[in-house]
Length: 145
Image (cartoon, rainbow, N blue to C red; front, side, top):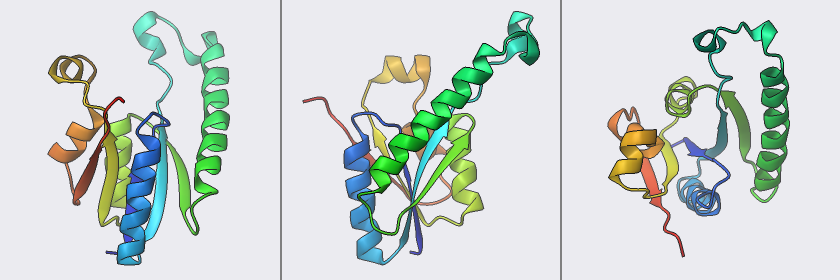
């Protein structure tokens, strides 16, 4: 095992996902990548807009990227030798692509356990990663205290 990818969403799952991924990386002597996905700007055409007619979304996306980079850098500062990456896209597809493109051997991510109804309505990145996994996927359960 040479490369481990940990998906970071800045939720209550983040600390446990990082802790678990760091432990796995140390155990296997693997390189660790912390990855956060910035969701793309909404499709303007569905609402009759072109991107030029709705520039506030560009500004919002740029600011979200700056804030995400700052948070990711802060988390990575506590982990020796870690790589950190911001990627754009739909979370599930962006993570699947990142894993393939970087030759990852293991994916680590958190599961919030929102239940079946929430998963049906809003989807679950963890569930999608397990269903479409191209590498072993370690799902770290996170429960509310």
